[in-house]
Image 1 (cartoon, one colour):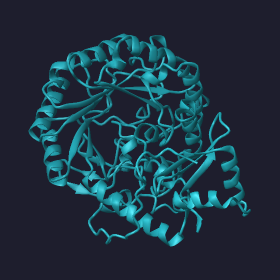
Image 2 (cartoon, chains in turn brown, cyan; image 1 turned 120 degrees about the horizontal axis):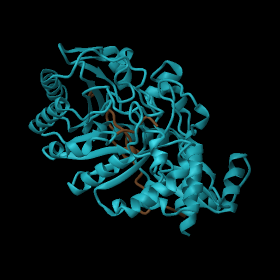
Image 3 (cartoon, rainbow over the protein chains, first blue to last red; image 1 turned 180 degrees about the horizontal axis):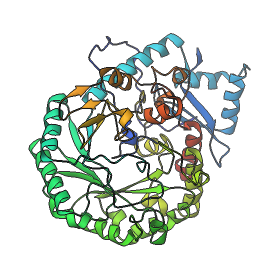
Image 4 (cartoon, chains in turn cyan, red; image 1 turned 30 degrees about the horizontal axis):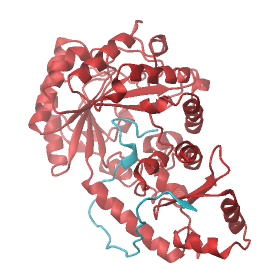
Length: 39
Length: 442
């Protein structure tokens, strides 16, 4: 197997406390364009 | 230990090798033909080489189910925290009128409103967003119709809108067909312009056959002059090319044209390809449309024949290009739909909408900011709650954290339910992307 990941993979298993704030969600950081999240 | 339900495993296009990717733990590997066969054997319940089995465990492709569930929850909360801090994109539509009659317009069936934009409505918009999004990072995107129409009154209104944006300390993006932009340069220079999106669908006649003036008339040359004018005046350009089977042949020429103009070397210039597709209603010649995967298969073949296309546009192929350029996978994508989370849209009639896909559709209104503020909280909550954990089909899909459930508006148009799927062909795109970015560089 040839890894394509340059930095060490960080594996967190500790569960955080639930976030009770009203959430506002976001678009993929990889797909940020002015208009274009529909497709 | 079990095979992670977030593993995406397949054969690389044009290669004997395989890939395995896991968006939850960030792993990405290329496998030889023999290693690929061992994974197939493992999935078929056969015994496989112990050393290879150890590698799969070490790299997180074989997991303890309980640990993976904990990791999933933890990453989900990270995602929620992160989007709380993310910028909100606020669209403002000053009109739905347009001077173009593009062959594929999705707004062409919108009923014209009798109302007109006024400075009072612009003031009400800024009042609303300063209260509703107080404390959030945000920016404004002016959208249409065509916002930069060539009339003195429109110029006055856009100048006023930008002045108010300056007062609110907001950066501004403009989405325009580009036909009249040269007449707006001085107005645009008064604002903090982050980006101007213009569209060319090819060179000369290829473009003019698709994006022409109402009543007919070529537009290519004026838009090219507009792009030059923007770059000369330090206004960043995001050039969009909308593609279907009628103009895909023009992509190599379009790329060469941009290279020859010196645009691709300019730091202020970037590009995007948009697929022509049916958003709200069917198009007359739907056979000319690409599916998501067939578009990228065609681009993949074109890039092989015309590598200079990559100077103009680098296809993402899902997360492949990100992995190639960053040496790591992006964070898990629990939600691809920004609507009512980091995206809202407002129009000149005082209506509030979830996003650019729904803006202007009467039955999609989520309330008003003018003449009075009103909000349809139940509808808004449905949009806000949409993510892969709220869509049953996503929850059992191994590609959920790359796809993010797709577009809520497309999903609603398909099923009537916002919390349904708009699946992206992630595995097929990765097959192409690994072939394009990793195998071709070995």
